[in-house]
Length: 176
Image 1 (cartoon, one colour):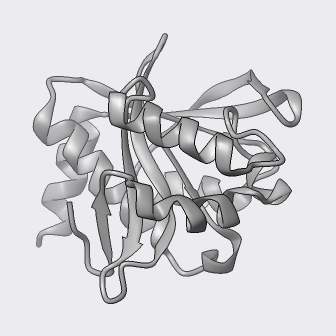
Image 2 (cartoon, one colour; image 1 turned 180 degrees about the horizontal axis):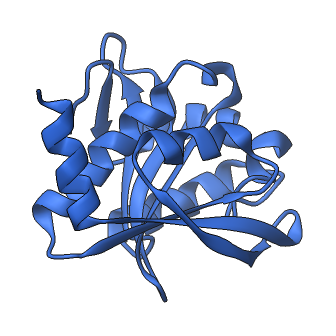
């Protein structure tokens, strides 16, 4: 899967060093439910094995198209509410639009390749950057809830949803 600036591919062994470097960051881990901190080689290997087995849903390594530099991950996970979009970007690569670019590609993939009627997303209430990504993809606010984060414990989250009809309307509008 490729976007203007990213290649989205299966995570692989040679991503391990950069994965660990970027993921071993409390600022990143506190915003995610399932990322531990500290994050070392053992956690990275566990993640790579889960990604390969698809126990974690479909996970993509986000790499820069021009250099194959690993910058984060994005994916689609099955939850009790349905299919959910997720992503994280390493702090050195924040504020460059990579999360939005990857999220747009995965939203399109979800609706083009599956029969789902609704795609879900959520973000910590203290994460305005993630909220902007979600809004740019056309998701609509669906309420608040609590999420159990490995690092931060029980945390409040905002939940969002994007239905197929809205996605189709947005796609048609964008192409004019």
